[in-house]
Length: 333
Image (cartoon, rainbow, N blue to C red; front, side, top):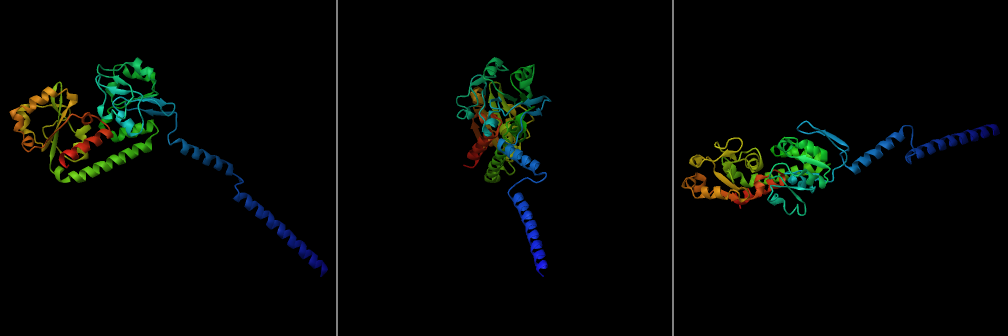
């Protein structure tokens, strides 16, 4: 019996030691001691965390622009030059290194936000590349292919990586997403789109009774005369595509010169007049003094609205948001 007791005690002791070993192994796992294959998982998690902290865009970034150029951006751009796209940059929280000017003044509706940003003139075509080079942009974005013609792209691309749109203003949703990608501002771009969509929705609700079955037309005045604006871009896009006004049969695609003799046939319930930087003062005066103008149905009803604001002739969500504010103020104050 004594031998049996000794054997039983030895057996119990051995079982206790084995249980203790199992417990120690389990504790090691709980405290994060790597098991087989765990080292790689830990490294991957650390890398993912670092990516989250750095943003969702990896640099160097290589993309193809809308003209087929391969563009490589070595690092997150800090000094951006995007003439006529300052609106989109500001909407994304980016202040450009220089701003577009017609040689007399920049875009006035952005004046407060671009205070202190030097102007560069485009009045005589391409700007001074020497002046641009002196401001050392690290990314150039051209809003349409015209800016890249006649060897200009080669000049720009020697200064900094240069991305060219065919026409950024024809599809603002797409163009701001592209700019958001280039500048590591994808989330901000989506936020701009959602906020604009909400603004459009609120305006459509307020104007619903006025837009239903109604047509609108925009007449632009400049030093060359009077022209209808089409509905593919700028304020024309806001009226027709965003707010739902019908399109006048007289307004053809593209700029279309206004003929005084045909104005009484203008099938528009609402007419908006834009004086382009007061360059159209003479043409506007001629129109207002014309007896033919007084016979236009919308004029008789008092449904003509005048603005000299440059954002009616600009592309960007800041500009288009201001156009919406004007239309609501004009029609449903």
